Length: 327
Image (cartoon, rainbow, N blue to C red; front, side, top):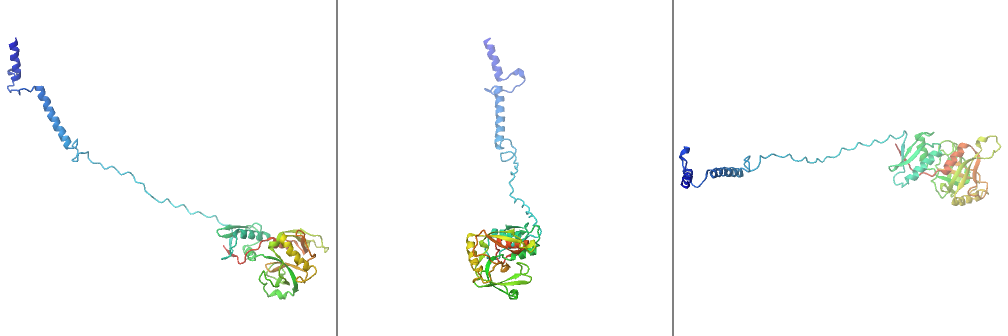
């Protein structure tokens, strides 16, 4: 039995004559091992090809086919659209602008206040005056004055003077002569017109005024009042104006009164002329040598319109000369 087994083993190693395959097998390499070796060679060849082609042989550079990625969208810098031009509201009809002239150096707020006061005193209370871009804008509103009349009124500075009357002259003496410059230290020749305070019309009186007196700065208040009847049966001219002067203004006024009451120089005529812009509004007679600053009344055949005009003249701040007007 032992011999027989050995013979069989040798035949398997050298070839099996019964299998019909006379080719000898390689000695020392079993068939399963040869198959495994063959597969290993194929695998190595495949791997070598993969390494040479970059892993999958899709391109020559060793990577997948190049695909261009789109660049990320870059931000675009653009100017924002311009905002629409602001639409300025339409100005009220008749609006005009006032400037003080080159180099005048006027406080525009004070100028606007003075313009409002002047127009209100003239009976045009609806007018508005406000500072607007280096000028004063005047909106007329409703009232009795047309724009040309308002501008004519504002061209007059409105400088008030209460001065002693040295003497009266015939009206024709003032008919052709322009009033002298305000603030003169010498005697001044001022007219009085038929239409009070106007620079047109018939001259009804001519006054030689002495220097000094008081101006707007001395007046604290003035109000219209109704006075006692004068007995002429006409109540339409029984109006007056109560005047209040400042503490400093009353001293200058009493100096004038002390000369006017006895008709002494420089108030030889005994009258105190109330003038606005070098035109006499009225020249009442002075009845006493001294007054308390709260105890001054102007009266004598004064109607209501004249009283209101006088109050306006007494209480309105003066305007600078040379105002300029534009639409």
